[in-house]
Length: 214
Ligand code: IPE
Ligand code: MG
Image 1 (cartoon, rainbow, N blue to C red):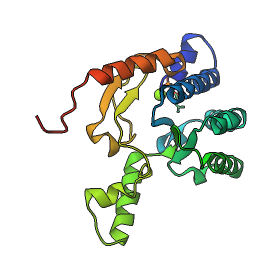
Image 2: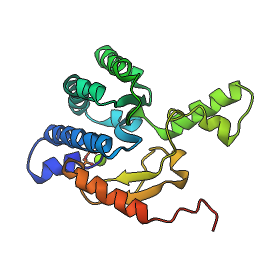
Image 3: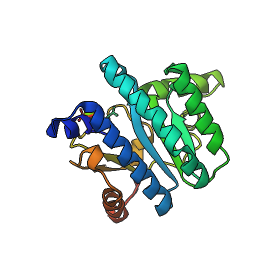
């Protein structure tokens, strides 16, 4: 979810306003994913590299995460959405950790769409952690590493969308993206709507996936 800052700058607004609009886009896109019957949607909300941002911006992002959980948790719970976190959210402040834990527990029994949120997530660290766990169990193979990834209970990654015109993965789902289809769009995240998601899914449906075969 990239482009919140540029969205705000274009309008001469503070970056925090861009993040706030970004949360509104999350709400609409998450609802659409559920209505479309997507099995899973993973949103990159906060990377291990985002700690490099100024303290006030990090504070604004944490505030938005908390208010989003408080405002939307019951809707997710009522609509069979299972919330999940990838990444090590225990590094966040205790109030955020508590709230996230509550959200996970509240929706743990749901089996519709899985809405995974990447919090303090970095793919290289995830892979290293998974490899260490696999090694401790005595075998390092692609399958044993995959079984220890944060995404182990999720379906294979089919489609990866990056907004705001950037054409890189930025340490997101590197392992999982091995055979994912990619969709890059110039749309800034706050402007990303369910119609854009549908456009990406339509393009995905046209792709021929051979997984190295022919
Ligand atoms: C959102 O967009 C990403 C988050 C960390 C939530 P950015 O804040 O990276 O926006 P740009 O790249 O400055 O436009
Ligand atoms: Mg950015």
